[in-house]
Amino acid sequence: MIGADFCFYHFNARRIRMMYGYDICPKCKNELIKRIQENVECFVRYGEKCKICGERLRLALTGEKEIDGTIYTIKSQVISDEDIYKRIITQVYDCEKIKATRVLEDAGRLLLEGDVLHTYLNMELLDDIGITYDVEPNFPFTRQIYIFCPDCGSETFYKKAETDIKENETDCYIQVGFFCEKCSKWIAMTYRSKMEIDETKYKLKICLKNVDCEKEICIKKMVDELVDKRLFSNSIIIFDNACNIHKILEELKKLSIDYNIEPPYPYKVVTHRQEWTEEELKMLMEMNPGLILDLEEMNDLN
Image (cartoon, rainbow, N blue to C red; front, side):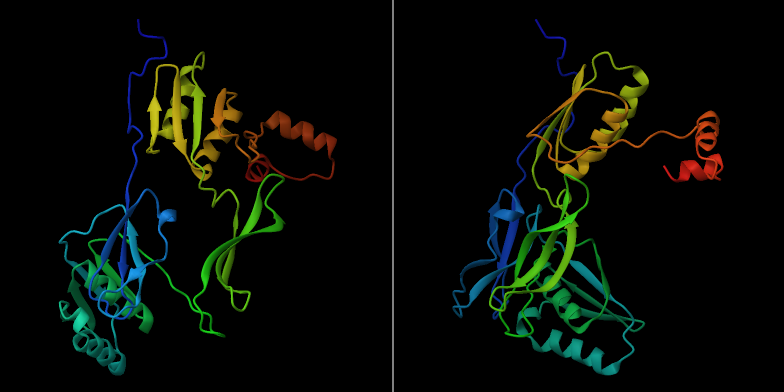
């Protein structure tokens, strides 16, 4: 016998997505060497030593896609400075490691065609010179950033550090950026809320039993674009991070829909009141004679 909460619609079942990482020798730059992990955080930034020169391999690219034979085209901005143009052409042609690049010209723009390795190297070159560009088709890998301390020359490391600055009573701001351990100082840094960088995978179960049709449709629309979810006759189960789940929790609280979340959710869920009515505004203005706002202005403050 099948229970009342049987699954009648299964949408994108949970599965482990393997992440690909590709190392490169910063000296030879002659090939990309594959590594595989369950997520990006598992990749260490340095791999084994290069078999040609002995230099330590560096993590260059990460992504969900394995390298294939796709040819990419980099289209640069219009380059009016002849010296910069010659510098790019010289570095592309003179460097044996990117000899597979095909160079074309289109009304002052450079078109650099190549596979993943050569596209990566040319993107690094153009970024170093300060030339903007587009890549077609879309380059499916994330390039790893290596930042060196301007004072001591040592490589900096990505770091997170809690601060005393509060977003609200349960969420604080985190310093994130690149830190030089030798000089003990930040080289590049910004602030992000703790919830934004929370990578915990939460399991949210939404109870739809006895929920009216209008509310159920509203919730299903909210979760429609989420990837990792399961829809049942009386519930919805979602697996996602704090940022993606937070707005859903706010809506569930506003609609008074029961839910359960694991592990315990550490951030405060607040609800925003619905629009003011004429009667509510009139009562509020009677209680506060100095308040001069019309209904539209009041709802804009919501």
